[in-house]
Amino acid sequence: MVVRRRQSIPDQTVRSSELTPEKEEELSLAAPKLGLVLSILAMLLVPFFYFLFVRYRMEIEIHLRLSILVCVAISLCGFVASALLIPVAARYLLRRNLFGHDLNKNGTPQGATKVPEALGIVTGIVFLVVAVSVQLAVSFLQYNLTADSDWLVEYNAALACICFMILLGFVDDVLDVPWSVKLVLPLFAALPLVMAYAGHTSIIIPKHLVPFVGQSVLDLGWIYNVYMIMLVVFCTNSINIHAGINGLEVGQTVVISVAILIFNLIQIGASTDPDYKKAHVFSIYIMLPLLTASLGLLAFNWYPSSIFVGDTYTYFAGMAMAVVGILGHFSETLLLFFLPQVLNFLYSCPQLFGIVPCPRHRLPRFDPQTGLLIGTSDMNLVNLFLRLFGQCTEKSLCIRLLIFQAFSCLLCFGLRSILAG
Image 1: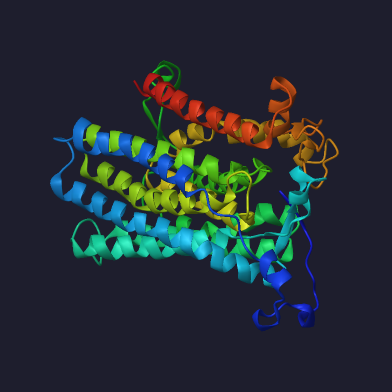
Image 2 (image 1 turned 45 degrees about the vertical axis):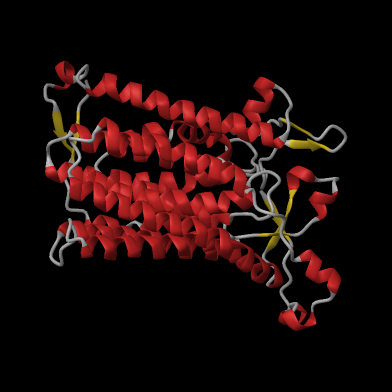
């Protein structure tokens, strides 16, 4: 979470040719935590390749496995590009007065440091380039993406929605859009998705509820389109409000992305329906670039963060996961993966809707003497964890919240198995 300190006078902008040694030092970033991020990437690829080559070696066709491997290779290039471009973009954004101060380090030298903001724009652009490259590569392999394919139309609509949300998020970072307007922005970004959606409008009733409903599949008709729009609005805003400490926004995206990728491979291996497999392959083509680009961002955003991701990243990541849930036909499962975000939203409702006074930044209170965060009365999971489990450092709090996110995703797999039978 940041406090913006921008100058509005163009003449005061620092030019590269006018930089003094002191200002040049101010624009330098701390070394990225590449060792940590590469270790995380290696651990995440182990279960992915296990399901791809071992668990479902016979069930996943060779040409399908090849297209996924191509996606992995291109996505890894996205990780490298993200890690290389973020320092370059950070210097330009800082020169243009897009910076903030870390409120969770008030009273320390780090709290007075200008931290470049809105670096999610780099991750978003890298993601789009990688996603389009995956599309071209898979088209060259002549799998799924033919010129007259409905699947191709949906893929392009998904990229249009994500691109629109990246733009709106960056506008929010620059202009500081009011909260009421932020809720409306995803409605416009979701229009290409709703117009291009050609899938079913029915939901599968959990087997335990079939005797009460009287049927195993319920067609919702136009109500399903309303549900899609509401899901987009929720996903794009839920990551944005479950934030405020270094690494939390990107960390939760990484955890959910891994859960989605594993779920996709399980469904591809367990299904014999070609269309159902294509839907989950589509999800992999979006989630892998999101995961690797986000890991490149996490190298700079992990505690102590040297950059802020901004609303650009939270909107973009939320939209990316929303479109794969909808076009991959597993939106109900996606909501289960978002369990911490759902709980955070429900708990935050009294403040979000003005029933209880809501400050601009619902952050914990930092004690510079001990270096620990203290929970406040604000209604969100960040402060709730501090009140329940006691004071801790910002890094420890982030790790606890991410463990809770991972546990929720594991719970989702078990719960889905029980409900779906």
